[in-house]
Length: 178
Image (cartoon, rainbow, N blue to C red; front, side):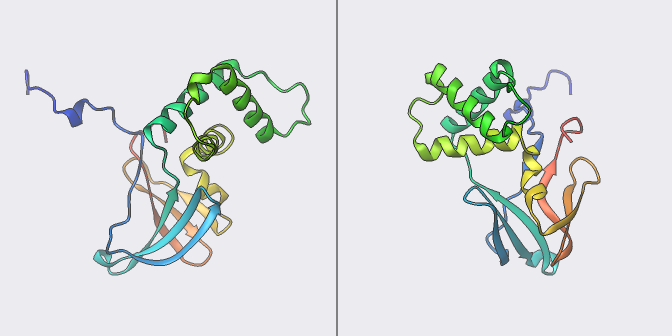
């Protein structure tokens, strides 16, 4: 409709990926850590779908301050991080050292963050720069044999060693991000 004012929801930028939270009536079948203490998996039974199982990724949440610190740190790392001098370097360790160096250089980024908050920020920096981003937990879970996605707005499915083919709580909403 021409001239219609867009709602806040329409104006808001659409998230490229959605993590669906389990409903309170879902029954926990199994739970295990993939990256302790930051990411675990919950296999849950969904009563409204006749007890069908689903794979829920449960990562530690960042508060607003931690999220801003993570975003700034990733931006700064992508611009200012110097390449390692040799190929024998432990990349994970190197990126964490560079993150610490740049955080000291730009103290405002981490001002007021506790050690626990800093560790959560580093988990996400590592996940997004060294890992597979939003699907990193799936890639790190030794119980999974296959990961598939049939397109945008469709749940990612996994082949679990114990539960076979089950949907996850991860949905890509942006074709380019997928």
